[in-house]
Length: 206
Ligand SMILES: C[S@@+](CC[C@H](N)C(=O)[O-])C[C@H]1O[C@@H](n2cnc3c(N)ncnc32)[C@H](O)[C@@H]1O
Image 1 (tube, protein in one colour):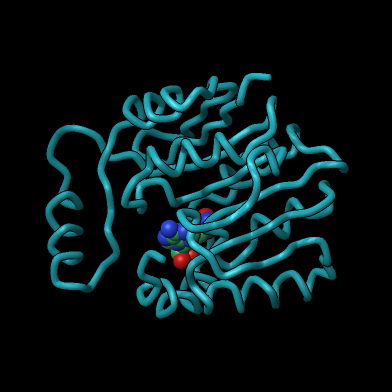
Image 2: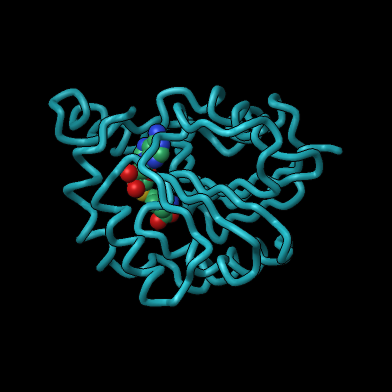
């Protein structure tokens, strides 16, 4: 499983920090909800402190929410309990080793995670396999493409010294190429502002 120490240490602070752009977050929830139906089984990988899963739970049959950090999951479970949500199954697992049959889910969500993966192409291919035909992959990803950016200098150094998790740098174009190369069709794409995370809904053709 990918290293969890950073996220275990960050969990409390992460749960207390406000959403960077509340209006954009609400719009992403709304767009996602337009794809949901009460008979659907949903997977969210890297669910963090569970806010997105808790928000969508009333609109679907079940959500399986996985994360590598036990501290993130502990907070997520308390949030679900406080909201009286009972159809989320929280599990400690990385997406790489998560076991479920092919075509198990109608919707897979992965927010603020694709840039943190060792091998995003492998994970996107796995998501494609986990989805039923006509299923959708909903993601929101920070893309830092070509050109100089201070983060491209600082983050790898922090990772080298074991202070920060791995962060990958790629452009929106490269991300879309990865998604399409796995057989998805982009159904919806939205970037609230230049430099902000790109929100993509990709469909697995029937
Ligand atoms: C930036 S947070 C995003 C949390 C949440 N999705 C959100 O949008 O607020 C990244 C999360 O991914 C989890 N994570 C990192 N690598 C993972 C992996 N390979 N599989 C599953 N979860 C992972 C971390 O533990 C952390 O909770």
